[in-house]
Image 1 (cartoon, helix red, strand yellow):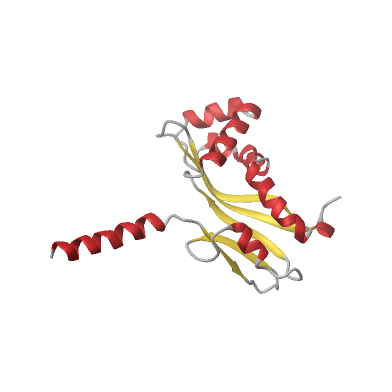
Image 2: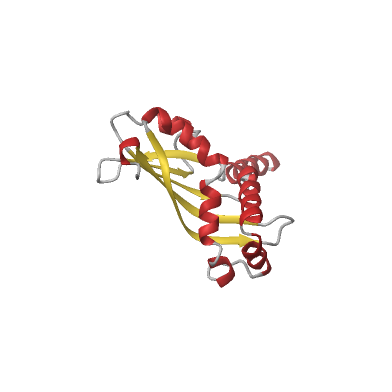
Length: 170
């Protein structure tokens, strides 16, 4: 009986541990282009997902959840906001941090800028370059700030719009 319980506990704990790993799934929406979604199944890396898309198929967007566990991106976002928007950041951090709080709402455009300026987006663009594509816009929803930890944690569902070189504005 003890062995049976140990096996069950091992299975359950491994499911909990691996449930937070990001996998990348390529889906085909009705318009013929593909979306790449961060989630619980699919390719092991975003690079693998991008390279699995045929060159003649356009990548429309990349969707992912900004995780509090992505320490590098969390640090970059915080540093960008602290450098470029110190007063708005200070006010937002002193507030409740929920997505409807006016102080957090006031930080939305700055948050968008910080994501777009991150090394993460630069790395994605480096992977898309071979396809003559790049991230041209960052959209999000449910942006909020968790302030109960030692360092604030930014959270949002992100949509990265991808365009081909010929779609670039200007």
